[in-house]
Every structure is written in C-alpha cells, then in structure tokens.
Image (cartoon, helix red, strand yellow):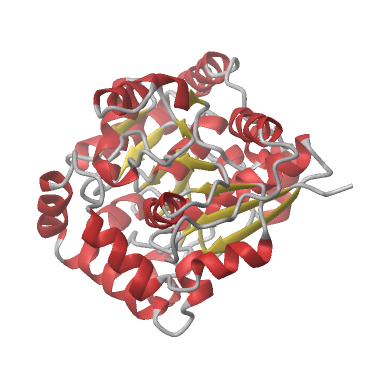
Length: 386
C-alpha cells in the first residue's frame, strides 16, 4: 500500500516560515502517523551557493532601509506576483523544482512562504495536478500570497479570510485554522523543572527575543531592562546572532546573576512558560507561540509590512503592546515588581480565552485535502514543457 507523502516548502527569509513548516510536520505526524512529511527551504536546497547571499542581502535591507521595505510592501500590497516575476523565479532560481517534485512524488504540497507558493502555482498552470495548500504565516495577507492555483488557504484569523475574499479568492478554499506552532507550545511544563534546568531564580522574569536572526540590539531598551536586574530576572535570547551575544557577554552591565544571555535554543517553549513578559519583534510565529503560552508581549520595532500588521492585530486583542517610549517598559517593570499577582491573573484569563483554539487545525485541514485526492497518483503530466 502506498504511503502518502506531504512535501512542505518554505524559504529562509526569516525563521518563522520554516518554523511553521516544521510545526506542521510535527502535527501531521502526530495525527496521522502513517503519513510521510519532508520539509525543505526550496531556494537553499536547490541553490545552496546562491541562497545565503540572497538571504544576507535581504537581511541587510530590512535592517538598514526599513522605509524602502515599507514602501515596497505598501505599493504592492494588493498585487499578486506578476507573470514576469513568477516566470523569472521559475526559469532562473527554481529551474529544477519540477524535477524535484517528480522525484519526491508528493500527494500534497504545502507552502509556508509566498515564493515557493508562486513557483508551485506556475508549475500547476503547466499541468501538474498535485494539490497545493498555502499557509499564510502572519495576521495580514500581502497580494504575493494570492494565486488562483492554490487549492486551500490556511489562515490565522477571520480578518485574513475576509481580505482573501476581497481579492477574489473563493471562500470554499479558505480555512481559518490559526498559524501552526510546534505541539510543545501547547503543553504545560513544570516551572520548578524549568528553573532548575536553566539555572534561573524565583523572580519576575522578562524574556527578550529578537527573532531567529536575533535583531534585538537596541542599546536603549537593553540598558533600561538591565537597570532592573536587582529586582527582575532578564533572559536575552539571541538566536543565531552570535556577534551580538558575544558583545553583550563582554559588557559589564549584563554581567549579573539575574541576567542570562542565551544563543540559539530549541527550548523557547519552556522559556515562554517560565517568563512573565516577552519583549520581541512581532513575527507571526513568535506572536502565535507567545499566545499559546498566554504570555503578555511588548513589541519592539516591527519590521515594515507584516510585523507592523501583526503588532496592530495583537494590540487590538489586548495580547500585546508596542514599545513607543521608555514609559511602556517602566510601566511593565512596575507591574512585575509591585503588582505581580495581577499579571499572573491576566495571563490565566488569556489562557482561558484561547482554550477553544485547536492547535492541530492546520494539520487536519491538510489531511482532508490529502483524503480528497487519495488514489489519484498520476498527478504530474504537463500540458506543455516548463
């Protein structure tokens, strides 16, 4: 009997897209153990020499020229990738995508980034009939996500669903499932065990994260947080930004028993469980992980586009607050030091509020697409050669 296969495609432009793919993979294996899953960052897999240069250039652009990025995002907000762009992606950067799919022979393809979604959409226009599920990993939807070849959109909220409908997407293709996060974020851990494992203290705790790229290097914010080190424990998590980690390790202001400097870790779920406040960039994945833990969030310098929209959405729901001045930080330090019981109670209320959320919703939706196409294995015959 054929073992059904699901191919999950992402890109390395920020860690959240690939994290969503791996979270989906874990959830799929959990609810359907007989299904095979494979996660690939398509550009890095097909062009391992070129991809790092492109990703580095993108990283430098978003960090050094945010106004330009915002302008580009807004000017193309309602536009799908045009035919020239998708053709260029297919011809120049993803020439071997169709061969890869023929080799892996998936029953369903899932994309957690708009670029592979656009590439697979073009291949489908040429005759491939493998179902395509696109997971929108933010609380907004840029036009680049939209393509008529997508069979199923998995989205975070009803607001995103409505925006897709406004852009001509059939409502029947849209499922509001929430953004998939790893199952660990929906589990509850012992704080005592976490404290012992990380060498933490029994104090109000702030977790500072800068995303997978570790963008959190604001001297003003970091210094202000460190000034409370005698009363509040601060955990700085730098992801892959070893340069900033090494710099702060050498700074006397951060050499204190209540300040912990961490690099990349796979146990963010435990740190979020233990901490009482999360200071972070509002990436869609990080926000969703924080919500799963019920932790209040302070949003620091959102990247133009999706992160700004994520910040606005979470603020409107009462789950986070953008940092607009030092007062936003000092106000939260006062709450942690002098009104800790109120912070704990508010977190309990948030956890009750999200109790009805189904963390495996996205995975179940993909299995439904898989079941609808069961038995149709000859899905790769081109109308014309790509």
